[in-house]
Structures are given as C-alpha cells and as structure tokens.
Length: 424
Image (cartoon, rainbow, N blue to C red):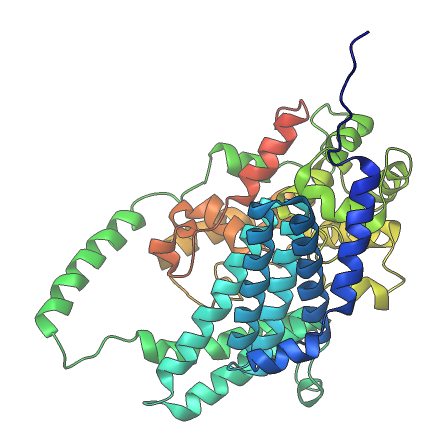
C-alpha cells in the first residue's frame, strides 16, 4: 500500500470556521472610525451591506482568493460612492435611489441579472428626472420647484398607495392622483421641449419637413402591432392555459432564476405552491399566465408581480404567499374586465410623450375592441412598455422614448409559455 500524503485544503469544517472568524472580524470592525475617515455617514440599511461586504472580504482573505477580495472591495466602494451621491439630491430621489440600490444588491447576491438590469434602468430614470429639473432652474425656477414636488408626490403615491394629506380631497384614488401629477408634470416639461422660435429657423424648418414626412408615413399605416402575433395574444382570455397543466407551470416556475426573489420571500416549494395555484384560479387568473408574468417582471419587490409596493401587503392582510398572489391576481382580473381603461401611452415614471397621435388613434381604436377578460386589457393599460410593444414597437428604443431601452413584456410572457410547452 502506498502512503498517501494528507491534504490540508479547504474542508467544509475549515470553511465554516473561516466564515465564523470573518463574521467576528466584520462585527468587531470600527465602522464609526471608518465613517470619520471617509467623511461619510452610513445609514442603517447601508451599514448592513458594508458589513456584509467586509465579511466577504475577510473570507476571501482567509483563503487567499484575491479576485474575491477585489470584488468585495469594489462592491463596498460602489456603495460608498452611492451614499455620497445620495447626500446631494432631494429626499424623494434619495428614497428612490436607496430602493433601487437595495434591489440591485439583493439581486446581485443571488445572481439575478434581469432584476439587476431593471434596477439600473429605474435608477437611470431617477437621474434623468433630476437632470431635467436642474436644467429648468435658471430659466424657470418656479416650474423646476413644482416639477420636483410633483415628482416627489408621484413616487410617494406609487410606493405607499396613499394620496398625500394635502391632496386627499382632490383625487378619488391613488391612480387618479398619479395621473394628474403626470399631466401637470408634462405641461411643465413641454416648456423644455418646445422649439425655440427665433433660433436656427432654417434648421428647424428642414427638421419639421422630415418630421412631417415621418408622421404622414405613420398616418398611412395601421397601428404597429395590430394583427400581429403579439396583438393576437393580447386578445386571449386571462384564464387561458395553452394546454399546460398546473403542475407543469408550478415545476417550471420553481426552476426560474428570476422567480428566486419571490420563491425565497414566500418560502415556496413543490408542496405549498399548489395553494398559490388554487388561489390564482379562485381569483379568475390562469396560473400559467400568472407565473409567466411573474418571471417576466422579476417579481419579489412587491408581491409577485411588483404592482404594489414592497410593504403594501403587510398593511393589507399580511405579506403571505396566498394573500399576495390573491391580491395580484384580483388586480389583473379586474383590469382585464375594465372596459373604460386606455392604453398607457406614457411611462408615468418618465413623462415623455413621444408617440405620434396617428398611432395613438389607431391603437386606441384597436384597444377599444379588445374583449373583456383578455390579457391585453390587463397588460396594455398597466404598462407603457406593453402599449409600445403592441402598437408602436419603436417606442421601446431609447432613440424614440428619450429615456432608455425597454424590454418587450408581452413577448417575454409568450416565450415563457412556449418554454412550458404551450403555443400562445
């Protein structure tokens, strides 16, 4: 028998001990002194993550993993830079940046690239709004102040589902308040976008000619999306299953990376998800569609589909899987039967009104004929990205919407249904 030299690599016991030692060092680290040296203040939510990155650094150091050490330091430094940036912006922007920073860090921790991208895009929207407000201050200081206040109110209502106290007598619902804030904001922003009448007249004249050509071209075409695969899918009932069984949909959902935040938040598994499925059917929504919708939205920031804010269900019956799934499904079912709704031509978070009126007219006509209880009535009125995808696909591009490149939500849901074995 040949003698085998013992090895002393990282065994499971050594790893546990290294992690425990790293945690101890992170706990004992003098964060107060660090804040003084950096001239920076860590709020509680940020301190928790600085500590987490510090612990990761110590674990990597113990095993000599230089790359992991660099990654932990890079993440911590990025968070500190974010805190410095937040100290210079209005309170509403601080709150929204905090929300998206947490969303990104939580997603990064579990490797959810899709949600990380969503968080980056949402934060870019915040930055764009701040730039717009700042650009108005010199020429229209009062308008800049009002736009800042409207933006703060819009986010307050969106996060809390409550109307600010001073406006509670004015609006019947949170949605009507948000719509009015958006309308007022658009009227202010129009000043920024209005061409200067006395400057570069000839250039503007030529530009207008080209714009008119494009408008005429669009006016002679049907609404983009009408009659195509996506628009046909929109007309299908929200109860459709596409021949997919509930058990197949459940099994598929539990394996999806972008479903992980929801799965972990509610502790879902192959057993208790059946209760969620039953709740969805009771609310009048196909579990197949609902699970595809959740995966496409990267749920978990609020309920399953991110329609309501993070703390909404805590205040409305409890943030449990059954309650959140029921509430989200009831919202979708209700919207699918709302025959008074309209396509969401404008992203309420970004204000830009860029879709040609001719496209809106034909799109509105198409939507008016969309049947009650259909997927499209629930989805198109809920998000601008879906409206553009169906009726004006170019609107998903930053070159057109002036804000960012958007994903195609409806196509994403259709792809998920196909992945389950269905044919939407």
